Length: 128
Image (cartoon, rainbow, N blue to C red; front, side, top):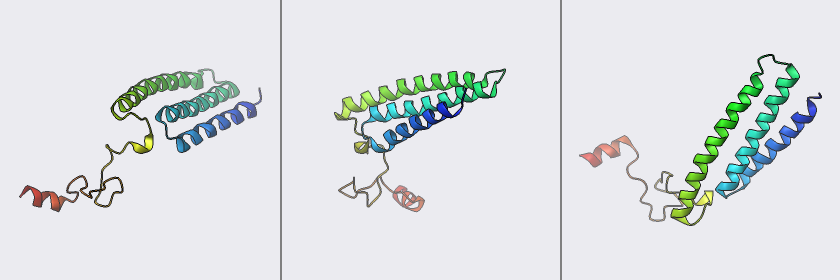
């Protein structure tokens, strides 16, 4: 078996997944792009395992672990996306700013209130 064919296919899959993570704004599409990247890694693991003729089949065993992690990631990720969509009405990644720390000059904080005192001295003055 030639190693170049699955390696090129894995590189293409990973590139498409990376483009999807960097360019997409919808959280569901970002999760699907992460899955494409994980599948590219799985393809490389199995291809190199066959090419090296590993007697323990470590690449295939590691592929099973990656599949389990991907299934858990997509389950938790979809639950979070559904809760965000239910609360916000949109799953746009760029609009999720409630969890971000707002500084005094944050463009998403029009009042300029910020998240509170950030320096330890300011916290000590606020407590006194």
